[in-house]
Image (tube, rainbow, N blue to C red; front, side):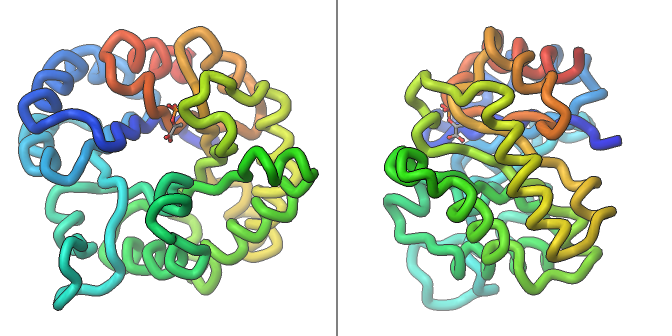
Length: 252
Ligand code: PEP
């Protein structure tokens, strides 16, 4: 059995004060849904305060990125140990980082390895663009991103990975994939690629989330699919009632 997960990617939203207010509002409701692994991924400056607010709860905290080097002259970057001080999770390879900040399958792979080595759970994002989708390149792109992003791990490390399938055309657009359409990508390309790399047990045990315009009104359609184990949520994670609707749908 794969435990469902719902992770909120706050992206570049919320000051520390706003973040603390949102978590204070969310926490009582979040605590009441222990059957779902719940994770909040705010901007870096919020991590310290939110880790204090979440202490003693089983709600996880994640960063939205990290750099693979341990320390040194890398102005503006944040090391794995700095993230690990406050977090249990880290989102890696989000399509916005691939599109705006030059992340490649190779750099995603370095970050995945660095995150695992320090003891963080990586949530590794993959997904095709609209142009790639329209050119029928979804299988090729997603398979490559999984194969390159997750290569060179031990069995033990691979077992800790969470993958998020996020078609780029569905992120922040209000145009979600359909449940069966998303499930197809997981069942036909992502899980089989993991199986080829790390075997059946790891492929079947791996949580694979869907992300892209998930909201309360469509969440159940995704969570009802056999291969979809939860959601990575952007816009709808910024308001407590909206996020809770999704978390509750994952528990149902
Ligand atoms: C995301 O950025 O990971 C995401 C899924 O965004 P949204 O839910 O807003 O489409």
